Amino acid sequence: MAVAEPESPTRRRAPRVDAIRNREAIVEAATAVLAEQGTAVDVREIARRSGVGMGTLYRHFPKKEDLVHEVLRQEFTGWAESARREAIGAEDPWAALTGFYQQALTGYARHRAIMENFALACSSPDLDGIRQLRLVIEELCARATDLLRPGVTTDDLLLLLVSLGHAVQVTDEHHPQRWHRLLHISLDGLRADHRSPLPADAAPGTDRKPDSESPPAVRRPSTQDSSAAPRSSHEPRRRRTNR
Image 1 (cartoon, rainbow, N blue to C red):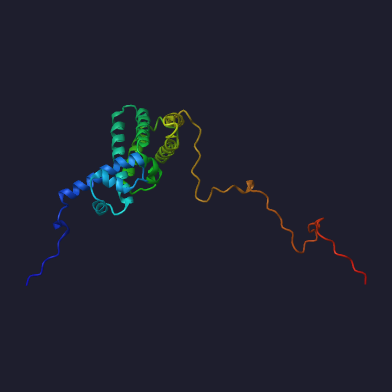
Image 2 (image 1 turned 45 degrees about the vertical axis):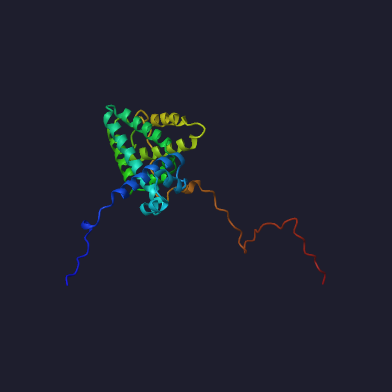
């Protein structure tokens, strides 16, 4: 009797067309809803907009975090690719750098989920879109080396993007265009005509004040110290007894 060979990975059945279609519909609906309402949205709203049942949604994305991660991955990847094309098209390196920030922050302001998760996503090196975004910034930094003040690094430019993104978030409701002013001020500070050296990154554990700035230690009186503190005026005196 012949023994059936185990099914190899290459012979596994490909996903059905309707399953692929359902996944795409879920991600498309989630992208729109997350952009409008942020990550606090109920997944039932995503299922409703995508036209699938909750069971179908959970088969593709067992946890809400999985769906949010997929949306952010696609958004950051598209964001990085768009920024790369714009940078290549700009002949002036400074115009490419400023155009990148303008485009990135404009897209950031239109997407609530990105606004809520950008700083966290930048700390996740495994997110494909962030890796590509970093490569774009490295390229822009290399092109504008002669125009940037000495010492500016790719990490500086990425952190600046995170900081400006936070400014977009805190001003979005009441002053939605104020970040343009802060961007102009920040970019002006990156120019090469600012020659003052940048402070070095502090090594771990060196953010403590130097000993010369530490307050003097307070000497505690010893139990054997003859110069003990005088007795409080409120302390009752012991009555002397005559023997």
